[in-house]
Image 1: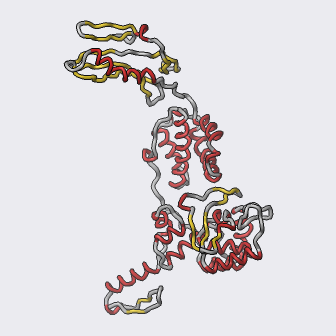
Image 2: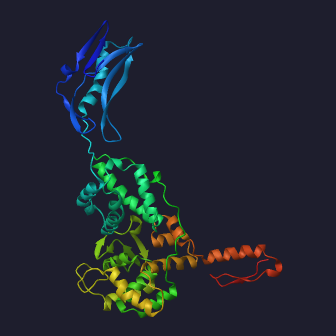
Length: 430
């Protein structure tokens, strides 16, 4: 049977129905010719044949191919037993399948666009839905890594092999595995958006790619409690209040700069973290887990009350800390103009505000705070983040446990008193 006709088999005879006669109220269907996409008129009544003791309905259906083209394939569906179903009953059972394929007209696939063209579209429509910090990082990934290497590639060429070559190329420099993952996530976001817009993009997941091995990362700089105290002592009243807030709570600098006066709950002794500041612009915090209520120590409460009474700068927004224009401070300017000069004067290696946050977590662990408590205070979404970032810190409880084990194993003449750093009690282990 040719592609231009369909046959309908009935008991005792076979009728051949011309495809041209069957194309009433035809709907367009996009079918690739190899070089371009043209519409094909499509309407079919299919055919019903006997196969053994079964009625079988045959029809054709357009199926989207991985390269973005549509291919017409033959389909067959069993309708029922000949002994229990008449030919007319088979036709009635077959009709819903025909209605489905006749009603569906696949849109012409969008092929041939380059990644650079899609990124231009993405830049026009997507940035408004992203936080400024996220968009800034994405723009850096696009400008320095993705566009130079993949910009002229067509979307259909971005298969697993192409992206693996891209990943290997990125691995050739001094980039960490985390940096490469972030670049790939930005690329994935662009391609996922293009796919939702109807463009044909091969499906490639991060697990399909071989990433470089984890390297031994440098320990994050942190300020000890003593160093924090020294830095606070050198700062002016407003900056000292900000540093004390960071040192006693472990807030991120953006979260501290985004606090409103109304976020200070002196009745319940809580600090409500609800927003952050990035490049002088208010935005939501880093993650959902970052939105939380943190305890306000009595010493911090007294300092904040004194600051509000004597040094707070009134502003329309109600910011706890603001510049002379009533706008949020820039963390970068505070770091360069306020923090670094103090660190240099104290002969402390220069670092950023995040070193204070690391210092808070380290001090909590060293003082024996459970990992879950540290996670809650740091507001990490997963305890594994806390453990992976501060696993190098050896707390007092760990020191005491190891010391007690050593005393049990050591020879009697090597036994020494164990001092519990938490309660300062001395005991001999026999």
